[in-house]
Image 1 (cartoon, rainbow, N blue to C red):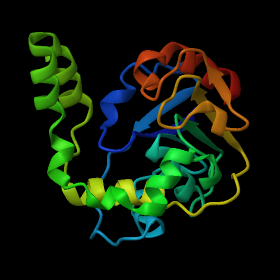
Image 2: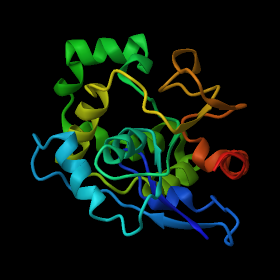
Image 3: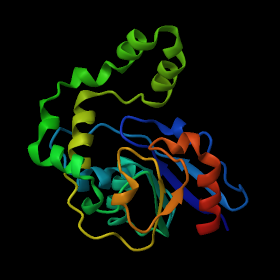
Image 4: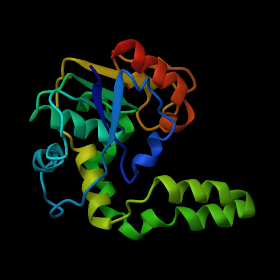
Length: 216
């Protein structure tokens, strides 16, 4: 009997980030979730997770989330029964946030950045690297397609201000030892991917798939 895995990307990313994830088709069936807009800037994470749960069509699925997607699948698992939670480049509780991110959270400095600043990456890359930046810009456009200002501000706020104190049981955490967003020294109880960065879902897909097959 196949296991159904629902995969949710990180903030602003779409399901194309999972294009390199290949698991034995006789054992697993993959289902790709996409972000939806919050009803408003104040929609609770619990309410949003409830709406995302409506997209789940199988009993006791495996929920896999990348980065902020990992936070959301944990919230979803509190509302539906899951076989397992899989986190990639994410955190299991607010205690795994780095000192730097905690400072940003406490000072709320993230609220001061205008949303248009989040859309300047392409221009900055172009000016700094010229034609060499083309591939980076192409990848940015391909994988990071959710640019709605309300959604981005909502996601950043909920990632930084997540209130979960204790890690959930039945969780498989896969983390890179070179993740600059969620540094490994802040993370406990995880499967470590050597030279894995925060975007290792793209760069270390084979290693991640091997861990999934061994642990699911």
